[in-house]
Structures are given as structure tokens and as C-alpha cells.
Amino acid sequence: MRAVPKVVWLLAAGAFANMLVAYTFIYLVLYLTGPRGLPVTQAGAIAGLSGAGLVAGNFTGGWFGDRFGHRRTLLAAATTSGAGLITLPLLPIPALLVVLPVAQYAAGAVRASNSALVAVSVPEGARRQGYAVMRFASNAGFTLGPLIGAAIAARFSYGWLFVADGAGTLCFAAYAARILPAQGVSRAAGHGAAPGAAPRLWAELRARPAVLVLLGAIVVTDTVYRQQYSTLPVHLAAHGYSTAFYAALLAVNGGVILLLEIPVTLALRRAAPLRIIAAGLLLVGLGYAVLGFGTSVGAAVALMLLLTAGEILYKTPATAYVADHSPAGMQGRFQSLYAGASVTGTVLAPPLGTALYAAAPSLLWPLCGALALCAAFAVFATVPFGQVLAEEGA
Image (tube, rainbow, N blue to C red; front, side):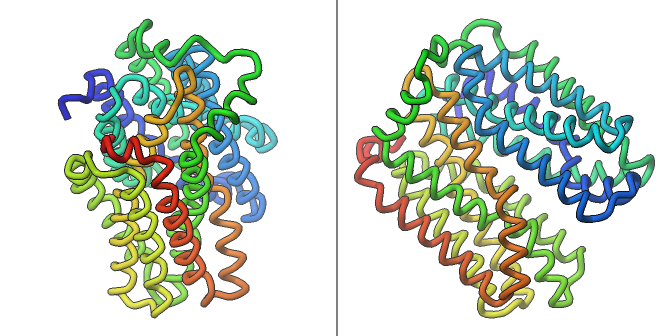
């Protein structure tokens, strides 16, 4: 871990603190249907717009970073997101349709900027460790955050969740302004987007077919992976399991990641990245395939353990792989493509999963398993394209 520079450790500390209060999306529908009195359909539509904004911010945040500097983009996006969230309890419903997606768009740009800053700050060969540190910090904050949010909602009101999230994001912006150098990492990515940047991006992607295949595989797998947040709780409830049991499964996921992700990353840091990623996608598929044989306590626990193992194997190496294959001056755009692909499931998973579950519940889990297995095979088949990097074990 000595190869991870100080600025990344400091950024990870800020990400941990920010994730402690970044829980509003968890309680958004409850807030809209409760204090705001909206019907479920309208609340779902607003939540969908919010998710679309988050995905769009992830896909495009790196473009701003390449053009204007990743530090500047991070500060602007965090300030915009924080200011929007902190005002939400005071806004009328029509204003939420604009402000909430904008705030979430900015939050997505923050995530992309964080990822790009790691890419330009950590030397090639150590980026897996850098991203593992960031994921550890974010997951630790997210593990504790919902508990804090529940306490705030119970003691005060749901509206205060947005105030806390917004204030925390503004504090993160101030902290980042202090710890990130005005020169250096923020401009290390290049000299700005040149005319014809979009055609150049496509040309660079076509020159890296393994990256293109990986991005597609991540979109498919993320849609499968995030069924645990949409159809899985519905499926468990239909089989008589309580919300507490579902929460315990999610706690297993967070706890195992905090315990094992960094040690596993260090142990496998010299292994061929594409093969590790393919193995992770394979485990995600096997996890959902388990439910095809029944929904016992053992099957549910096995599902979560396999999903968690798959996440540990594929998420950090995939992020680092895209960073290692980014051309000079385009690290932000490449990280944005990966960041966007890695959250696409937040928009696709709920409608697709619930629609299939309603029509053919016995088909959903085998199909999820098959899709993830196909994604794993596609990535494994690209190994020859990434042979140079695989041999280096970067």
C-alpha cells in the first residue's frame, strides 16, 4: 500500500465522511410518500429521474475534468450537489423535478472526479490498491450511514436527512479544496479536450477492444447485481422472510467487503486483471443461479456471499484496468465511461427486474445467472487483447 500516495488516502478519508451522510436516495421514496404525501407512482417517477441524473453525472463528469481539471470539477460538482440537497425540504413538489436530478447529476460527477483523481495520482501497477482504498472508505461510510439516517429520521424528520446530506457534501467540497493541490493532480490528466474530442474518444475505444467489451459486460452485470436492491427483497418477503433478515444479508455484504477487499486486492495485485474480473462476474452469476434451486436461508446466505466475492474480485480491478488503458489526457473520460457503466443498474435493474418477476418469477434468477455468466465469458474471451497488461500483472 506504500505506492498509494498521500493525497489518495486523504481523499478516501473525505469520501468516508461524505458517505456517512449520503443516504438520502435510500429514504427518498419514503420521504416522498410520507411527509410529502405523494402516491407511490409519482414518488417512483421522481426517484427514477433522480437515478437518471446520477447515471448521467457519472457518464459525463470525467469530460469536464479532462477539460477544466479534475479538482475544479470535483469542487464545483460537490458544491452544486450539496446546495441542491440542503434546500430540498423547502421546495415545492414541481421544483423537486428539477433540483433533485440536478443535485444527483452533480453527485455522479463527484464520483467520476474522485475516480479520475485516483487514476492520475496513482502510478500504473498500483491503481488496484488505490481504488481498493477508496472503495473501503466509501463502503465503510455507507455501512454506517443508513443507521445514522434512520436515527435522524426517527428523532427529527425525513427532511433533515437532506439537510445533513447537503451540509456534509458542502463540507466535503471545502475539505477537498484544502487537501487537493491547486496544481498537479488536477491538471495531470492532460491539456483539455481538443476539437473533435468525441470522435477521438471513439477511436481510442476502438483501439482498445478489451475496454469496450468490459464496459458492456459491466452494464449487464450491474443490472443483474442490483437486483439485490429491487426484486430480491420482494422475493424474500414473498417467501416469508422479514425485512430484518434482508437487512442482515446486506450487512453480510458490507462486512465481508470491509474485511476482505483490501487483503484480496493485495494478494492478487500481480494476477492478470481480465481473468480476475471474469471470475468475479462468474461468481455474481452463480450467486443468482443458487436461487433457482429454492429460497432457503442457506440459499439466501450463499447468494449474498457469492455476490460479495464477485464484487470484490471484479469492481476494483475493472476500475484500475480502465485507468491503466486510458490514453493521456483522457483519463477522466475513460473513468466516466466506467463509472457510468457501473451504476447503470440503478436505472435498469428495478423496472426490468420487477417486470420480469411479475410476469415469470421462476425465470428471473436463472436469467440473471445466465446474463452474468455470458458477461464473464465475454470478458475472458478478450484476454488476448489485454495480454501485455496481463503479463505485467498491472
